[in-house]
Length: 136
Image (cartoon, rainbow, N blue to C red):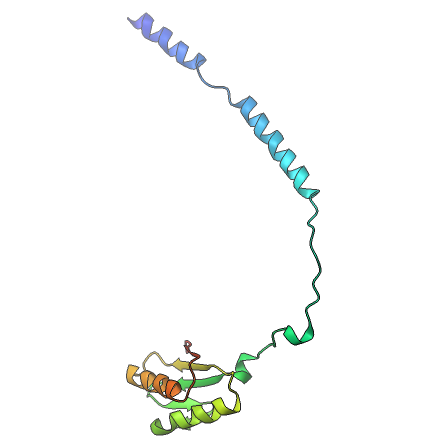
């Protein structure tokens, strides 16, 4: 019986698959793809876009209406402290000066949600629908 087990172990060693030829084929294919990929020339057209159709670059600091809410729920538009009731009027005025400008609200993490909702509602009532939130 021991002789039979020894012969079986010797047969298992002989039955292993030799991976060297497969690796050679894979490396040859890899070299082929690398060589052919470097000689492929991309064909395309250069398009000259008319000057009027080019999008205008917008400086977000100058063109957006930034409203900051402090930790004590003070509302700042630009560098001015704005009263609770006059938020809508200020947004309407700034929106009339620059109708493309989005409203960016920067609430402090300790500010009340009520203040944020009031500022967002004021912007909507002022006719500005491009309102976004930013971290402070």
